[in-house]
Image 1 (cartoon, rainbow, N blue to C red):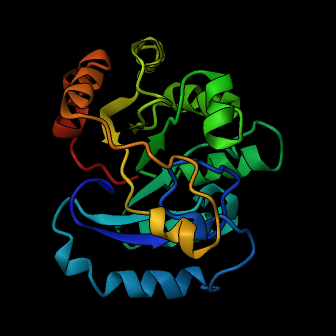
Image 2: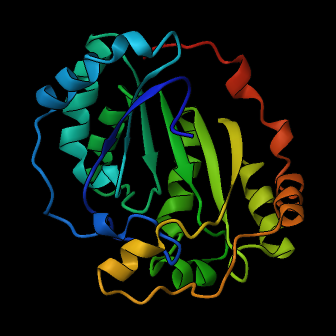
Amino acid sequence: VDGPGIRFIVFTQGCRMRCEFCHNPDTWKIGTGTERTADDVLAEALKYQEFWGEKGGITVSGGEPLLQMDFLIDLFQKAKAAGVHTTIDTCGQPFTKAEPFFSKFNTLMEYTDLLLFDIKHIDNDAHKKLTKQANTPILEMATYLSEIQKPVWIRHVLVPHRSDYDEYLIRLDAFIQTLQNVDKVEILPYHTMGKYKWQEMGLKYPLEGIEPPAEDRVKNAKELLHVADYTGYKNRKLQLV
């Protein structure tokens, strides 16, 4: 679920989104966590390189990795020099074409092989309710990644009473079909495995009483998003940037 092959996963601290289904609310706070240098992280990752095979590599997740752009650029530049496949797991919320973010983002893309791109909700109002943030920068980033032909795997968490409505899924499908760089589309059924973290942090769990989607609803979502049509991830040869 973290990209092709066996991956070394780096979890970054900090996120502006407040997803109601978040299973890592402990990563929200910006400016906390353990400080690590890119050299330090890469050295640790390379210890496991023999396990990666031909398709493995490094995936940076979060939190939201794009909040720490300078670190990502440093890490991925050095990873590429070492012949490592690089992947970012992102919700896209920090994206903007304003400077200095945009120039840094373009530099980062030069050293990024793949993005796991989460679209939480296609409807802006519903997205604000679900995440406390607008989806405008997210959809703008998705469109820009298509323009520069950067491979993405689109991922969508299916949440009953939130995103599991045919109307929304049909709209999301129409948007994804406008993109020319989608190698894979994944439906991630909502789960409650992170609920205990909310409780440990003294937070009220916003989806109390909502159960994971039934199997038939997951199947329905996969059909409406034409998941089976996106097979680029099977055919794309591992081409290191």
